[in-house]
Image (cartoon, rainbow, N blue to C red):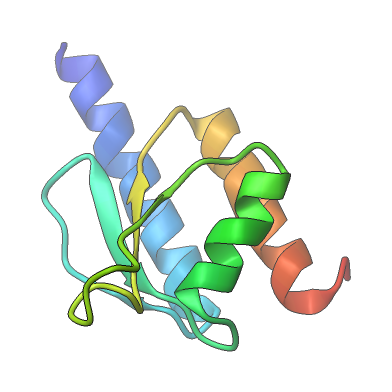
Amino acid sequence: MHANVQAIVETRKLVAGKLAESGFEVARSETNFLWVKPKGITAKKLFEELRKRNIIVRYFGNDERTRHHLRITIGTAPEMFRFLDAVSEILHGGE
């Protein structure tokens, strides 16, 4: 269990850092998910584009307080690298 917790912590830190480098607002987290506000794309559009790639994140668009954010559950390192690659592709048109 401790190894799993450590893996989640390290992966969360890496993903948060990469998203912050892309200009996303990333809330501080001590959980197995990140709460982020994308930059350069709406949360709804990013949610839709990720979904097209079979990457599921949570979007709460019915509430004014949450509609600009996504909840990203921390998965395995390979899953999260796939997520980061998809975000980069969506933001930069496949660069």
